Image (cartoon, rainbow, N blue to C red; front, side, top):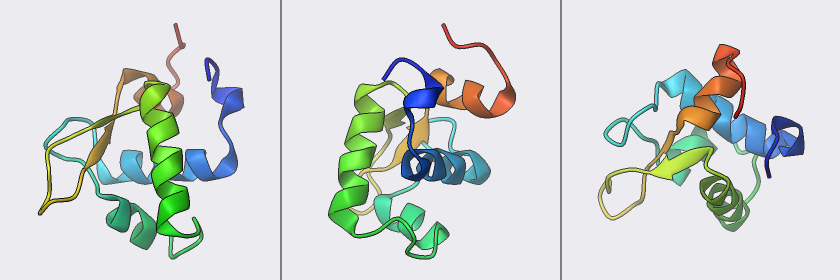
Length: 90
């Protein structure tokens, strides 16, 4: 996953939720439940979202933040922020 064109719609919706929430550092992340609630259930079941999040972490679009009551939080890394702010990818 080296290019934004390799993102599918669900992955983009996840990144959009994080961007709209302002999740740009490890202390302002969102949990999977918050992301699912933000998209009104259109992302499918929790395991599907978890797998997409794992893929986005491995591709360096998002990172894991601090724990929120035993749940991982996620936030945008530089590569993910550039998708929305018009920067060029490396």
